[in-house]
Amino acid sequence: MPPIASKSSSPPAVGGPSWYSDAAGYWGSIEPTVQGMLGGFEELTDIDCEASVAFIDEYVNGCKASRCNGSQLVPPRLGKALACGIGRVSKHFLLKVFDRVDLVEQTPKFLEQAKAEYLGDEANRVDRFIPEGLQEFVPQEGRYDLIWAQWVLGHLTDDDFVAFFQRCKRGLKPNGLIGVKENATRNGVEVDTVDSSVTRPPALLKELFTKAGLKIIKEDVQKGFPSSLYPFPLWKFRAAPGQPGVCHAALQRQARSKSSSGVMSRPTFSISQVGHASFPVGADCTTRWESKSSMEAHYAQLHAERPSVDCPDCQQTFTPDRKGSVRRSNVPLLDD
Image 1 (cartoon, rainbow, N blue to C red):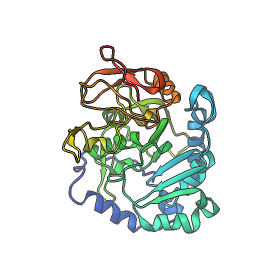
Image 2: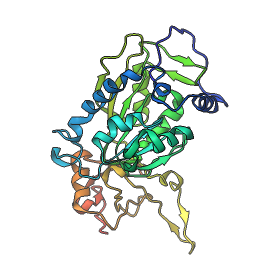
Image 3: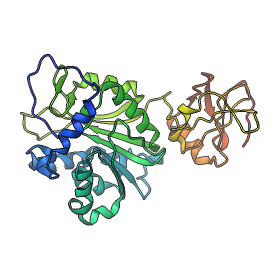
Image 4: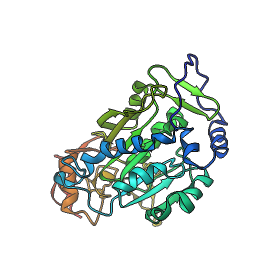
């Protein structure tokens, strides 16, 4: 929701044991209508969503489209709306651009309203209605062309903000994008204890994006909103160079593990940005990057978008070779 800017100069602390439950309680008391979602600013929907469509258009249909050589995304294109409410942004923005969407929202009655009434026939184009808060949501690896977060990040603490976007990176398809439209103060941090939210200045937001391993590739500001509201920067991101997307199981398997035969097996480390493929490396590297389905396209995308990747285990840099394999200069190539 687009809150009115306040003058608070000494905000209370962010977080605490009831931070997320208080937010859930607040939104549970809000009516599942557009007026409820926007706090009385229903008339902003067209301006809001038209600006969002224009903001991503060149990356979806134009010369900067995220698939190879500037061609447009190949259907079915899948987007995800975070903290979607009743589906306002999905209906008027994402479903005008993407073939299918997933909706994530922690308030059950909002999802029910989206499914039963608000989206109408467009509800048939929603693959998943996911009833979770962003602080605990884990995207399916390699699923999305675009993950869109709008007017929700203020409900996350700084640590959860960073961890959330690290998980989002792993949910992207090769060359997938993350889009953000968020409230931002002109300076300082403002905390709303009624709905458990924090509004951050652009500099702090960018610092958190960087910590999450995101690289800004486009930035703009929403135009046409009343001056009484916070400014609304828009950002588009890719994973930053040297920040490969780790598969969701990798964090649990960084240490060596024993197989059923008692022989030490190597953990695996996948990179969603290269099409779920992971690649073989030298025997002295304790992280094994492996895939029996590596294809030329994986190599092409890695080479074009990520000329090298850093192994998180041995700290050495690997460069692409034929059929998606990766090697380092002093170790012979190991074929699948």
